[in-house]
Image (cartoon, rainbow, N blue to C red):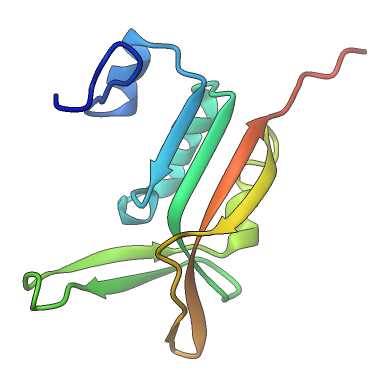
Length: 136
């Protein structure tokens, strides 16, 4: 309520937004890795027809496949833990390859290397653009 205006709105979920708006850009900042089924959400996002997708503060791992980890919150903040998907970068971007091109990827501002079981965990951002239909 404090930030919404005629150019910026917030919605409970993607479906609610798409009922009211036809946005060109989706900004997904540090949320997809916390979803129970991020791949179902990615399919919804891809089928929504956004011109641009921006994923920022997304966790990736230098492993052969995606991994589910446990993120523990510092007890100084509060005592909690969360399941966290750490994506293989190449497999993650390949999920979008039929409909989107990667324009650029970048280190997130919160980028810090963490090593878990000898795998590097890191955070990146990715900008994707919808592919143009080819005329024959």
